[in-house]
Amino acid sequence: MVSDVFASVDGVLKELGRHAYLADRGLATSVFLASSLERPLLLEGEAGVGKTELAKVIAAATGAQLIRLQCYEGIDASQALYEWNYTRQLLHLRTAEATGTAAAGEADVLEEELFTERFLIRRPLLAAIDHGLAVPPVLLIDEVDRADDEFEAFLLEALSDYSVTIPELGVFQADVPPFVIITSNRTRDVHDALKRRALYHWVEHPDFEREVEIIRRKAPRVSEGLARQVASATSQFREMGMYKPPGIAETLDWANALHLLAETSLTEDGVDATLGTLLKYREDQERARRAGLESVIEIALGA
Image 1 (cartoon, one colour):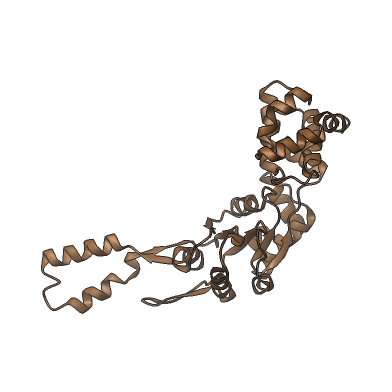
Image 2 (cartoon, rainbow, N blue to C red; image 1 turned 45 degrees about the vertical axis):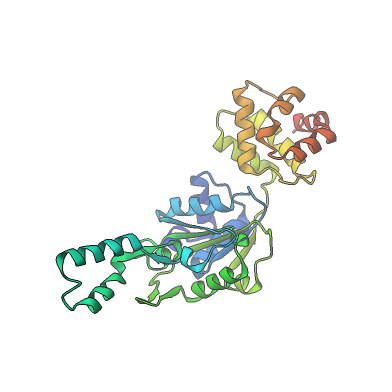
């Protein structure tokens, strides 16, 4: 059980840290409460702050299966819940015809056979609810803000009591609910009804010291001095109103790129040459250069 591993806030911090995820106490508290209360956890924040990574680490820390439902514009209930394996159903019909079963007055029986679990393809939501596992899975509903209102309403209904209905088979209900993490980059507001059903936490970019420690953990070849400079410069770029502020993954890419180029300290030429590993939009790179790379480096060298 997730709650057995995450028995306290300090336990959450310890287990996440053991898997190189450095959460702040607020986030660890939210994970502990969501686990103890068996409630979904809605994480909002800018892209790249570690929302999706948290679900992966929770699964790794608890030994649970990670089931990911990636949301996108136009996704509907059938793509999240289930569908019938039409190829296998057709093959079953062809076999029945070849053996004479279909012509032996057993058409009704044959039709019923087509809509059994044998031909059911479980999509992420059904797989997580009807999991049958000793350790409940972690269900990651990723970027729910990309889906439309109707799909969000469907999710709310499914998560209200962790049950879904398949007309041909009946009701499937979780004996032990999965640990549900819902993420949103807030490209649109998630409805209040879903927020009321879930616990909520806004995930910030890490503070300076925590980002330095993340670089040291995830990119151990990078020296502490360069890690501090990279974290400082990244923090400054985030405050420039970028179209896409750099996330933790970009920070790590940048630190590793500088190390591979044998850069032991930030220089204007080195930063300019590697800016594309940190800032992924031309407009953001131009904004950084207009603001002055030299001034950013000067502050970073004193970090």
